Image (cartoon, rainbow over all chains, first blue to last red; front, side):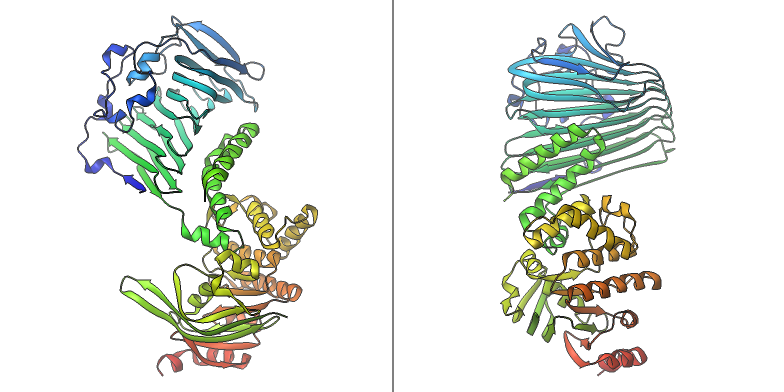
Amino acid sequence: MTSIINEHSHGLAPVQMRSERKRSTDIADFAAISKTEEQWRYLDVERLKGLDAGILPAFDGEISFTAPAGAAHEIVGIDHDLFGSAGTPEDRVSAAAWGAAGQIHVLRIPANFSSTEPVRLEVTGASEAPGALHVVVEAGTFAEATVVIDHRGRAVLAENIEIIAGDESKLKVVSVQDWTRDSVHVSAQFLKLGRNAQVEHIAVTLGGDTVRVTPTVAYAAPGGDVNLLGAYFATAGQHFEHRPFVDHSQPNCKSNVTYKGALQGEKAHTVWVGDVLIRKAAEGTDTYELNRNLLLTDGARADSVPNLEIETGEIEGAGHASASGRFDDEQLFYLQARGIPELDARRLVVRGFLNEVVQKIAVDDIEERLSATIEAELARSIN
Amino acid sequence: MSILQIKNLHVTVETDQGTKEILRGVDLTIRSGETHAIMGPNGSGKSTLAYTIAGHPKYTVTEGEILLDGEDVLAMSVDERARAGLFLAMQYPVEIPGVSVSNFLRTAKTAIDGEAPALRQWIKDIKVAMENLRMDSSFTERNVNEGFSGGEKKRHEILQLELLKPKFAVLDETDSGLDVDALKVVSEGVNRAKDSVGFGALLITHYTRILNYIKPDFVHVFVAGRIAEEGGPELAERLEAEGYDRYVNA
């Protein structure tokens, strides 16, 4: 049977407030992963294929960098100032990967940089050996850039990505999870926004056995504006989990979270937990989060949990919405009434539903590849 | 020459209060080139007739038949009916997020014709049809019905009518929510499509206003799920003067 789970934390006694969650770079500070912890409650630990066992070796796949002139890729040691500058692990896998490799990849986008060409980091896995990777993206003051981190191939990867958006910068970061069917990927992504920085973060997850992406947003100064977008499509047996967290600690910042998912097939499982914390100092905050899931077949399950913790009354706005369901019959009727056969109509609706997010990437070859992947998944099993 | 026949049509719908019969024996025959106006008060079943012809799953036909050139329409799926030549211009067209008008129109045209339209001619056809309906060329890049005004939605419906060239067009309260200028543009579009394609039209309306712009050959007064009176254009004039009270209170 299809399960549709929508719980609002308002009605439940929270196990732990988000503001009280443990942060540490030491794996010993985190207990073995168990479903009794809120943040692991939906995931079977066996699916992690050893990423949680202990300190991890370096990722053994290939990493390639292309960028317009001015942007640079460097590999530096963990004694570098940038290491740990945007965040601290909040879970065991992130801690297992933290500094484990002894080196980090830095994508440096200098102050006043501006280019319509994207900065690209291609992370291509080649084995099922558990490994760790640490990436830092640093955009200087007034920089305007798009960064694509493209994950492909076969991998069992624990990853930390730190994203530092300098004062007044405009940064778009796209994280694509397009792995082979047996891959495992746990990616903690830490965003830190400077004064008036505008960041668009887009997570697109289409391939892998188990993928868990946790984008965490912190504001270093007032005026930051973040737009967290996500699209995912899980088919039979896949587990895709996205847990965006926006920590409003500064006044007059904005956040907007929109994740859209499609599911089809037996035991396709997606989890979306959206946490927003508005601390006492964060007056004038404006935040909204939204998750929509489209269940295309029986046997799939979408968990969707928006959480909002508010410690000040002086805010502009705070809201959330979550809906999971089947096809909108009226949409199908409209398309069919124009002669489009039901199967094609369903494909068109799903494609459009996910494309709303994919279109925002605005990098042609990536958009085309992702659209083709969505198309292929739809062709395979909607019937 | 095509013919659409509706014979003794009975239709029910499920409501919170149980099964309710909306259409109670409708008989109607439309031929190519004819324009029939169906007029009636709110709740008389006009829109139910429109949606039943198109095959909306909400409505159950309990008795009677619909034949298109002798073919059993009720045995066809919604998309088969459209491909057989039936078109419904909807009163409340739905939004399809992420699907552009241009993609939608091409997909529909390909489905109706059974092959993709020749690209250059198709682009030209769209351009001309949009200019005629006074629609901005950027319209095709927008997502279907998303953020459209009431007038834009209706123009988009008539644009499809012009491009898809059906045998029979059912226009469900196409005049609702339009100011006089928009009504003129939309009506011209219907007349132009009708002249070029020669389809039969079933014009469903509450008011006589649209009949000043689209001239009916026949007028049917719909009351309580069946046709209560039929006549020529003069019947519309009489309704304009007298309203529906005579039927409702009868």
